[in-house]
Length: 342
Ligand SMILES: [Zn+2]
Image 1 (cartoon, protein in one colour):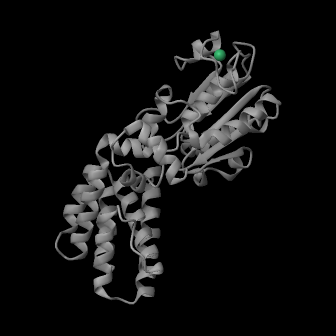
Image 2 (cartoon, protein in one colour):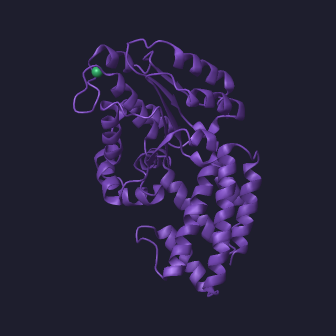
């Protein structure tokens, strides 16, 4: 899952990250004036460091001598928290090998919530991938959300908050993260990566800096180029669906569907505005040329691409949520649709 591993390496980055500063400042002020809500839904796309943010904020809340709205890193609470094991912070998410957050995990969480604080201050519950709460777990969590114990704060983190029960969402205050501007993301990445090709990384990650880092580390940029090149070959009838299905298996179907979705939106935009993609994006530019050369009626093509985009998004959502067990079949069917678009 994108950026989960990065999220766990919270100490590798200085939190708050530049694009999180405003949210951090607001929350820190609410904490200082004792106006913090009992439950927050921390939502927005992956690759923005939401879990890192929450984890660092939890440590800040427990810090005895914070400096300018940041944990000191030196007090007994900070030193304990530095090992990710502070007894007043309880973090859960789907356990290894499981798609869901289960009711047993919520039972432990509820016990933690009513327990006396170890250090005499606040207690913090963090639920990562909160959209994966199964029905029983979600119902059990509702009880804690309805009657939050004093001085206990819950942070539910999710990239797919729309999939959560409305009853859970409505009991949380929303803390929404969006991608920073290209220049802000670029500045930060340049410090991290030096001479890497920042523009291409930002384009592929849609300005999500942590995702861009991950793409750089895993060579995913080359995968994207290869995937888009093969999409072009398929559109020209020079490649087979099988080849792309195999490539999707190699790079991961969820990632491949992400490329398909992003590519369709760029193509739609290009057709509607009669402009070409960003000059750094040669792979998508090549696809645009293929569509242009066919000289089809723009409106019909755009409508087709919209329909295709929606199908891709639905399929991607199903794969992420684990509700469709056959990624290969999904890819076959969508690539067939793609080959029929023109
Ligand atoms: Zn401290």
